[in-house]
Image (cartoon, rainbow, N blue to C red; front, side):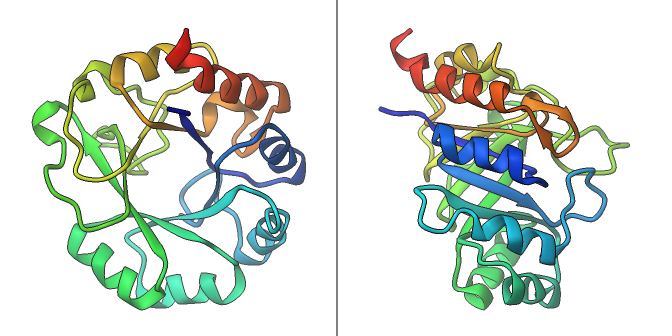
Length: 211
């Protein structure tokens, strides 16, 4: 099975074009203002339009957004998916509001934290943020990858947190992840992707199952 790849936190054309050239499955745009990868909706719309006619799907990341915040972004940006840091109940409400595919981010500290049921289309599994963190995700923390090995996931899922071209192959093999998500691991600065690192990450993720 081919490993899916999401590159998150795009802010500029060069990095985005590298994602498209090397075949990233999902392109992530961050709408959380406290993130160093935050992108204004008008700018995000310019980037998202570059994905039209490609095989890449455009994902918008939101942290506890209001209805008005989501609606304002969707009025400007042609998103395919909403990735949410919120409760399952709130995710269901935003699914009804937006009509979009919903991904729910799930912070995990141990195997006991893994979801056993799901009301969204995909789960994003990552390490729980420290108590003093200013963001619930995107902190570059690596999950103990064997936590998910053999897990009977209730929905398709993606592994995130602390992944790099150097460790993604091992992460896939240890976690049994069907897909992976990277942001800082392929950057020269927050939001600025390095095309060579994007290429290497995608290649190593895709080859992990046969390594």
